[in-house]
Length: 430
Ligand code: GDP
Ligand code: IMO
Ligand code: MG
Image (cartoon, rainbow, N blue to C red):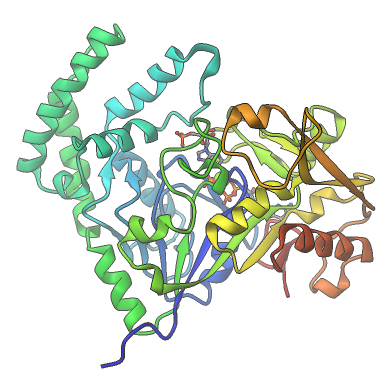
């Protein structure tokens, strides 16, 4: 018997505040993968894949689904909106995409209507200091998981178990909705009936993803983990409390799918050539000016899930070095270099300066400390022209190559891919 894995898995994570173009990178790497697995988040994610002019926006289903026959697995760390995933499956099937190889772990928690309602109500209650969630019920579902009163996919596909558990949890939630939030109670019996039907349709997809992932690793298959959200949205390593409720960092893959860290040896961080954020919270390099607006318009920076305009700003190497460290990155994919063309001189934030004059090289843990920081910028020559037709890294204008080289130096990580457009083919591998 041989111990250990000969072909350790690859992880792809977002290293900013989400929407870095992970979907595109996963789709490209999935062409060489035997299995694609998601391990956290829910349908708060929106991953765009463009192929032959067709645009797919995936929320829960792994971005490997476009390759017929590639198993796409959803691990125990993901939260599932049954109605949402069925709509997604139906939408893909209607476009000729086969979802027969989709599998969902029975331990994954189910987003129920009360989670969605409570997400909206708690945001409203926060008044001016709301998080700006996607209102998909993500936080309240993870709260119930930690509180140990959540419903899992196993329950959903077993009607007797589901009915009993959902009734008891639903009644508890109705007390919360009526007594604390002062809104109408939900009709629990109707919800149970509706969700049992979803469970019937989803039961064929249920399988132990930990076992499937382990078997794939043992058989030396090429396993690819698809991260959702981004490092700065991680509940521990992000800009708490302006974060999501899961672990988008590479370590989240282990608990969110049930594999050990020895299965992984490559971690690719996906970033944009600048920074964006959707939702509230600190953003030191944010541009509230014409350049920021130009980046938003040119880069089409509007949320894939909610359509909200994304906030835009310069590339921040302080958050990138934080991401290199907390994810153990082995390489970076820098997307949307094309969007920065014709902007003029570019800026890279290399450190933060505090009001007392001291310089911070590492991302601070508290928002209070961050509020005292100003970005320290380095200026670098911009570039002009349409990059979208470039096929090789060497074809890029010298100023682009210099920009990427400087990013590698300040981030302390090699750049292995550069994106010059949204399509599969607009990715320059080095
Ligand atoms: P994800 O959540 O990380 O998968 O990213 P999203 O799909 O939410 O947002 C990224 C957007 O940028 C999508 O519309 C992609 O099609 C697009 N995109 C990805 N890479 C590039 C690139 O290199 N250039 C341009 N112009 N667009 C890109
Ligand atoms: P992908 O996978 C960008 C943000 C929300 C909000 C915060 C909490 O497409 O990169 P939540 O609904 O998760 O409780 O919201 O997190 N957020 C994302 N921002 N991309 C995402 O996913 C996001 N998923 C959540 O805007 O600020
Ligand atoms: Mg997205």
